[in-house]
Amino acid sequence: MDILAVMTQPTDSPEGALPASRAPTGKVGVFGIGLMAYWEQFPGLKQRLEGYQRQVEGRMRQAGVEVVSAGLVDSAPAAAAAGEFFGRAGLNLIVCYIGTYATSSQVLPVVQRAGVPVLVLNLQPTAALDYENTDTGEWLANCSTCCAPEISNAFARSRIPFRVASGTLDGDAEAWKTIQEWCAAANVAGALRRSRIGFLGHTYPGMLDLYSDFTMISAQTGAHIEVLEMCDLDRSVRGATEDAIDDRVRAVRQTFELSSVDDRQLLWAARVSVGLDRMVDAFNLNGLAYYYRGLEDNLYERLGAGLILGNSLLTARGIPAAGEGDLKTCLAMKILDLLGAGGSFTEFYAMDFREGFVLMGHDGPAHIAISDGRPVLRGLGLYHGKRGQGVSVEFRVKTGPVTLLGLTQTAGGNLKIITAEGESIPGPILRIGNTNSRLRFPLPPAQFVNQWCEQAPTHHCALGVGHVQETIRKLGELMRIPVVKVC
Image: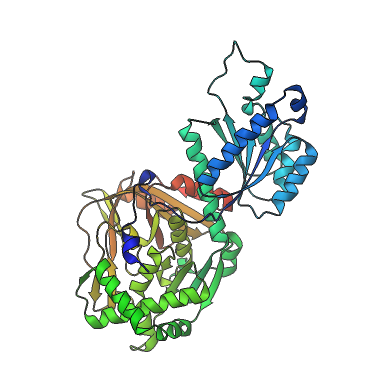
């Protein structure tokens, strides 16, 4: 693992988020619509609209999704065939590109069988018609808005969730930003559906907000929960080779600023880190929620105390690790990481009423790729509230725009997403071996905390860089998980 490569990746993507350079995980079905009766009446119209559709599909592929195209649908039988095709494709989103007028009866069958939300693209090829010189054929090539209301009515009465994105085909940054956000949301939904999240040990005793029903998690996200034993970790750590451990120690010394770390602590943390990698590979994990208390300095206590370094490195590689057995926050971290925003394990620390910010951070795993400068690996004689001692990670999240994402569970047993956008600001932080950042939100600290708590969040949340709240809202629609925006 090249830790330095993780730490030095560029961060000049829009709105401060990290670039997400991953293979497509979302499948988006795209179909265009038109009326068959037009083709004989207006030669060349169909070919022109098919060209526009290819342009749309190309730009969506550039946005990072796998496009499954049903072509241009122009009749009710063609709609039924496209619906069967989409129903077998395992889609996360369907995009209906309005080429010209089409009846809603040839649109509805396409989307009914797939059971996923629909994005209707009302993208006009020209910004305005040349009214003095436009004939009927030219108008039909630009009348995408004509059937948008009709289609919307059919979807609403059929209880099919949908959104409409209106604008122009070219030169419309706002419309294409919206489409790119939907593509990003589809990728996250697809990745979560295929994720394998490890659950090692148990939740921190007494934290009622963290307890989750594994079946509920799988039912609402599609993620598989792999229950792991400390024996699995022990076997993986015992299999770590001395060469791999030495390489890990060298990489850690290059990546971190070491403070009060003795050689024994570093060597053990490196050994556990290599073992963690082996366990993740053995079980093909995409995330990990973990906690184990141990007893009287036994092996499992020492293993649990040695996890912080390795889990921070895993998190920076896109395999989020959430402490205290917080499975829901592990998924929140995964979402932010898939959006290129990082996603660090976080909780509320304190309110600063003088400078108007909230101090947020956590002990344990952190996303070192979003550190503001070189992270510190600090040796601790004890872990507050936990057994054992060893090394811990300390840093402040990059200054600039940030997004909080909390994943909680309602009294009815349903997942709910809570988000907020703010700013990470410079200034001194606590030097206690924990991540902690100064975060300023549009509301004063007390009002922000009040409004966040009113949404019944869990103790923890994920902290990422950039403003990605709008994409999260779209993800919630795709996954049928409500999203509440604080502030």
